[in-house]
Length: 176
Image (cartoon, rainbow, N blue to C red; front, side, top):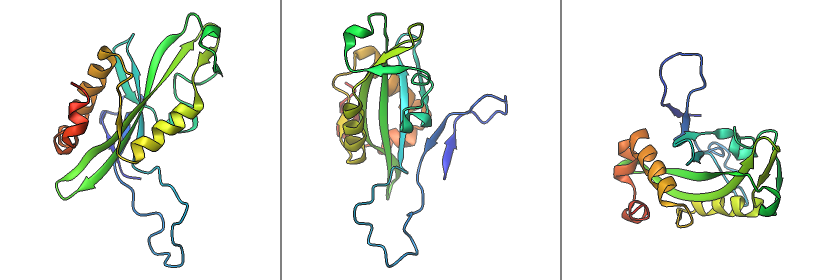
């Protein structure tokens, strides 16, 4: 898997990795048509924490095992998490054009976590649908608050200015 390592220093800390591209998983297998196969190789989940003004790549979110989701029992009723802290998981897909790699699809999903109670709120179907929309090149960040959008935009630009520059105007406009 090819990835971009944002923290190149060897500080012993976990580095942020952003999946860029992977070779075709069925390349060299002419008997496989690919029907029904979905590849998540170009997708990376970003976690936006508006309370801590922090955004990071957390590949564990692909299996509901991100830093914020670990050891949390999720419920579908917000009332059961009255002291929840808001987060956004932003499903981000990168594609490649003649100009180079670019941000292709971005879809945000909301969750709340109360660490003390070890309880959280999220709608799994919303997260799955957001992943699907991101894979299809859609931009769905309209439910995000302005502060979270700004944190996300700043992260995307800083992470790789070329990805931002090569992105469609529709994606850039969604942040305004």
